[in-house]
Image (cartoon, rainbow, N blue to C red; front, side):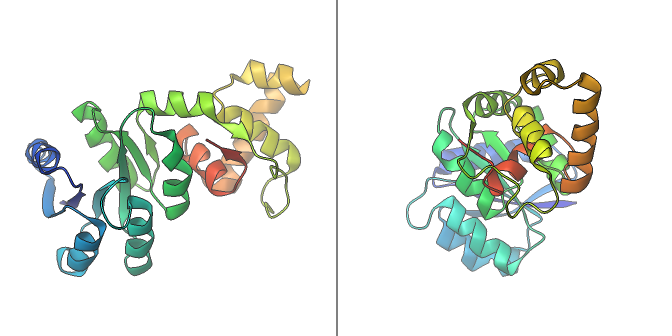
Length: 213
């Protein structure tokens, strides 16, 4: 049974999501909160495994709430909720430790996939959101191997290309290397970073200051 908490200042949204989640026999909504402060007060008693976290709330925002919650419950899986086009918050939520990123109008199948993915230790972006984020990512001024002991400069270049949604051929052409070399670098990046998919690579790159939204 996956224990779930809902943190959002819109009561109707919380109630609607709770009703949908109730249709899954292995999901149980154990807590609701309309603010970050309220969630932190009930965190110890509720003991959720997963929390759906709105970013924009009165009082402390979703990122600060996430940081405080994870400081107390490191294994908590946070799925961030946002409206489409609200790109400014992704870096903040990724740095805070969110593992899932969903649009508030996502299909329920994506909500279920997100819960199962983060519970399995993965990172989840809704498909539309990942496409939008990839297209808007920019390489940071500090995108180098400094402080990135695990990755070489070439691997960082390949990682940035993957996060920007470039194909293997496009990455190969950009850096004048073969597709086979790109595939080899990608495999090394996944192994070194501990990431499993493009979504987790995007979060890894954002958290480590290699790209910005």
